[in-house]
Image: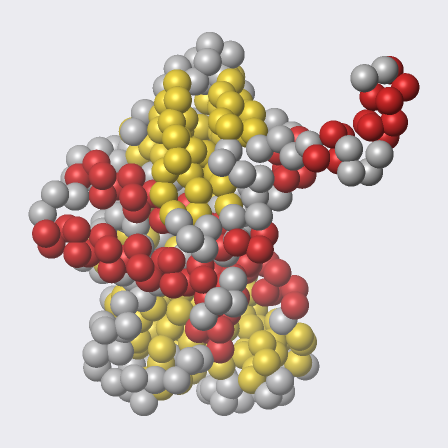
Length: 384
């Protein structure tokens, strides 16, 4: 074939150039803090409509580099997602989800951190914000308590055996407390001795914990447990006028048309508790839409939602319809623990089972949790 003929063939839409497939290769670098990771193993994961699990693993190069040849370019029609993970000092870290061929043009990065071993009693990490929703139910008031903590250390805080990473007291009269049936480790967060106790590793940055409980009435003490950078107490109307120590009634927020909350807010609180008590009726503040507060509640790329157990959540009062705080938590779940986070939950669950699941009971619990996660992923995809 002459050069002229070859040139025509390459220029022709149906020629060789038009048949070249997109490169299905993931090239990346793993970091520990600001430095490249000089050893260890990186694992490639894939989740799609037809399959889930680990695809491959390889040793990280001296310059922190790695490269995987993917079985195919991510196919949105099959809900293809690829991502990679590394384990450093016992903690598993994930890179971002790859859902399109365009992302393969950039260097993939996984960021890990050295660990900081917390004392047995845990460490006082910053409580960046706390939002407490009160909603009436047949037994008194149902409370949804959102804690957004922030690890300002450059290292991941981990617990020692039998210890904790962080804890915070809950109201003394709280009942039916649910810190959720976590999809991951059984003891990621628990309710013990009147406290929310967190044992899961806490990387640098923000993380959200959600707790639900009931109280008989609104005359109570809300433990603050040290410095709280921002505190919001939101009481669904109709509600009695309240005095909330250290907080100011600033507005009424409307999460949905016709559903309003009185919002009490404060900042830089250092007291050990906030007293809540009834007070005399005053003119109500004007209604404000909740866009600002919702944006405040739902920020953060690595948030963690504790989902309550449906069988234990309302043992005293029976089933109840979804409340506005439920919808707020669901919105946070959508914004922060979306499909990508659920996919990574599957990978982490697989890792945990392979590392320690040996009994039939372990296997059964693993399969049930995995099935729930996959069902939620498919529900987000609109396949159910």
